Image: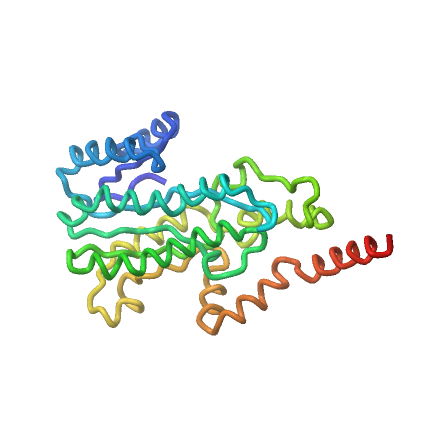
Length: 275
């Protein structure tokens, strides 16, 4: 999907081949590694030259998947995920706030439905996306005096390349070896469960982000919502979250095959006890 008419899109990526593909779609392109302070500084300066020092919208979309049982995680791996999913957003906001204030612009932080639900074997990912939500809510208040708005995308299942990234494996001795097949099913869950087409999601996000926030008390109905719930399963998650966490927990219990896990691990424990 190319840039929307009337908008000047400045796309960033780490790999030159990706930048070339984006340039062919008519976008300006700038190299960026959101986990590298020097790369962020260079990007900031290049973007300032392109846009005259005013940035209307900053979309923090960089993300790293992390599917692994909480008992099997590697802390260096966890830190790498938080570096991409959380700390990079904080760094990008700090770096580009001058251009955002100059334009009285908008920051869009991409979170996930996993931030409000027990996404089985995704404790690290859930924690990182929940951190994005908490950070964004406070950031919205702090930036209000400067005319800069903050929007959070509570993203559902959307077609992406996350499932093609290198998958983690259960280590030898994992307490979840008996349910390895469920773990492997979960690795690609986001790409096989009511998954929304990428372009459909993007068009809706662009349309809602360009809406006015005024009048403020009506914006959640008629204007640009501060919280953008879209993608596969998003409507159900919003409804359950609105009713209460117990609803999300109850649905997740069956959605993520917990009865099967309880049975298999219980049988395994009983067998070991007999031995």
